[in-house]
Length: 374
Image (cartoon, rainbow, N blue to C red):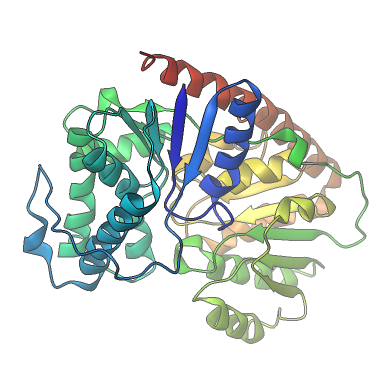
């Protein structure tokens, strides 16, 4: 069976999809399957010019809004690039972005197209202050879910909570399958260590949706309560200058290290003690599973896919969104009790190996792919 994995970003870009699909491809190829990856290079801009039309709604009523216009132009660019580069047929196409899915089905209508919805672009834009909830851009982006349902052969997503979110925008949510992300265990090498000062780490884009302002305020309170720590922030984004300024204002800049983007943070992660990320929304939260496989204690917010990964007090700690005091108390608990921290980390690692192994993903994907064998 010859399968195309259609991405939006090139696989070297940060994110859960990029970190998983190349390993999926490698594993299927080792099993004798033909599998290739395809994506739109970042340098491709404003090349496409074909008219765009959707079956389930008229996108032109939203034209003139920057997010909508950029989305439509990117769709056109993906059409242009796909026509230029793909010269063969496939038995199945598995898309990992709505634009990729809709373009592939448009250009290859006789080929089964599966679509995994990995995240909510509209929720992220709202949380990052880029669009208004209930505004035209929001309506356009949520209309895409119904278009996907109508167009592709199978919709998948990465968590039950995100399936529930999508259900408000489709006609038959029961048809949506759930395959959580999976990770190649060989990438993660837990490292037994003893840090004299507790080391916190987070890995994410530095944008408002990730709640890093809450994390900095929690760490400032932790310092005021007399606890030593170092906070390592791996990632980059528009909020970095604002976050660095906030760290200075809160008097924790000396305890905080801003690294910028790192291609393979899993090689760095095992030397730390606690992974903490107070996201305001998260469809799955791949980095929590990655941190668990590095044997780190987990602290996250009780939202989306995070709360499906963390059972509070068993394999990590959950706190409410935007509650810096609750986050401070959770971190304090782990600072004060290394044995508790150790036990949470081991429980998190065991669950991640059991639930989020690449073997499980391969088995589930193979079952879906097999239904489309000719």
